[in-house]
Image 1 (cartoon, one colour):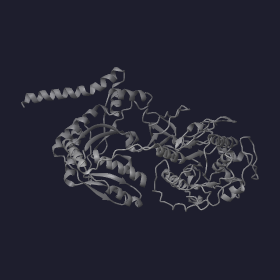
Image 2: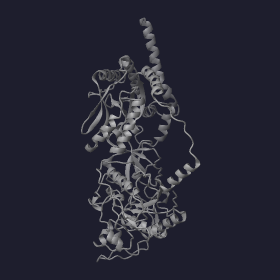
Image 3: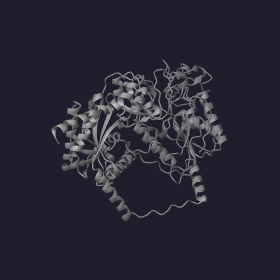
Image 4: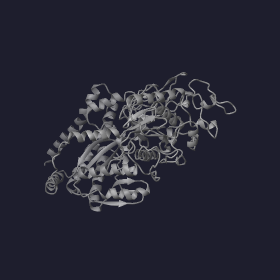
Amino acid sequence: MAAGETQLYAKVSNKLKVRGPSLLLEPLLGMGFPVHTALKALAATGRKTAEEASDWLRCHRNDPSLDDPIPQEYALFLCPTGSLLEQLQEFWRESKRQCTKNRAHEIFPHITLCDFFTCEDHKVECLYEALKRAGDRVRGSFPLVVPLALHSSISYLGFFVSDSPADVIREFATTFAMEVAVLADCTVKPCAKQLHLTLAHKFYPHHQRTLEQLARAIQPGHSCQWTAVLYSRDMRFVHYQTLRALFQYKPQNEDELTLSPGDYIFVDPTQQEETSKGWVIGTSQRTGCRGFLPENYTEQANESDTWVKHRTYTFNMAMDLASRKDGEASSRRNGEPHPPQTPRDVSSIQALQATIARKSVLVVRHGERVDQIFGKSWLQQCSTPDGKYYRPDLNFPCSLPRRSSGIKDFENDPPLSSCGIFQSRIAGEALLDSGIRITSVFTSPALRCVQTAKHILEELKLEKTIKIRVEPGIFEWTKWESGKTTPTLMTLDELQEAGFNVSMDYRPAFSLASLMPAESYDEYVNRCAVSVGWITSIRPRDGKGLPRPPAPRPWGWAAPRGGGVLPRGWKLASFWTLGKPQPRPPPPQPTVSHRGLCSHRARGCHHPGGGGGGGPDSVTESRWDPGWQGQHKPLVSAP
């Protein structure tokens, strides 16, 4: 090609580069957005469409940092696809289910090619060109198969790339870094460590064998099309905790965030000292606004969930097509045809439906507590100097049970208020009207939960025939308890003396002494999962002849977040009351009491996470009905 022709093609190429970004930028400028905010929106949405960028700008119209020149951080990863990716994703799921979450679960399966680096918003298009140039340069020499060797240590498990293919991949990363330096004037540091694909990192040592067994089921030699992917993230929230909203929340104060299911919130753990119990302060990724939000409207999200995918470069396209044909032929040769599915007869389907209907668990939250209405100093309002109880308000209970240690232990183990007793009774009345058959009752050892179970059973006319089984394993998250020790709870003898029909023969999954103060959230989830599994394995025999409770498991053991799985042989319904059930329900809304409207987080208000405490939140088959709390409405739950 002549020199003149080369210059001509270069001019055409440059024109395309200039016109490319303007196709996205011009519509935004036509809408009246400034150039710098339009470029910021394009970078934050991966430069996909002008519509996505305009939607981002509308959502961020109240973002106080919208005009700040804060660039995104970018990184390049080599990601598997196809059969290998499916196997890795299955390992991710099983390792998380069997061995709890570890550091590797925060990010998708990948090989890191470079560290995160910053790039100004108007130069992001240059990163895409650098990725294309680097990929084109090594495409011919990129290995058809990337050999992966499994490596395991006491805190790390992963695949390492052998030297020869690793050299080609490093050349690709180095070329990308050089092109970025030339085109975008950015400094990119290629990965200097041995190339690896992490499977598990910083896990409990006793999980190593289980993780190794799961990893050996992965066949890294399967056909895989490797893709280089350019991601970005918001550099301001690198070390923040990421939460995902589960429920919709409408602010009741100006300093609160609006939540929609699926929203991501960045929370700085070091800035939560001044927040009220049950609330956190964070920044919404969707709007950029900062404010308070109820913590139990959210769940923990992965670090990479908020990353934005920009561009990809795929290697081995031709090899993938050939291997796909070979795979189809191999499956035809070696696979056995599946027999045609025949419809089940009507009687078997009806029998299955009847069996499923019998496998029901009803979870009920306790009624309104006195401390949620009268504050943490409620005990001082109803006790004399010599330690005797009196009723200063009609919403206080008529009397308190006798405790060997005196009245002071009620401060951290408060009873139901009069309204809470009414809520419990009307819940029992609703259950009676619904025709649900209750055969077993399990309750947290908290007095409010035992009282709720008692009043529900009384309305069901079952208080004499069904004994209440006290299970410390379903006590609330001990991190919510004040102090460095768990509260002193009433013993079975004290409960029985106070008129509660508790089972003295029931052997719980956890003893009161085993409750650890200030346990982590994972420890709380594990404790609930073990307890739920134990409860659902018990047949309703009033505590007599019960099997031995499970042996204590290490806190690294995990089960699905929703609790234990119902065993096939378990056919009868049961219910139990929880201090704070799992999965967590939404926090109580402000409640109107005889003292007037209590707004949560008001100055001097001691209501955790809001006012009122509401009535029992009821769920059937793990579906929460948050509408009960704070509204004093009966709820009929049917399996």
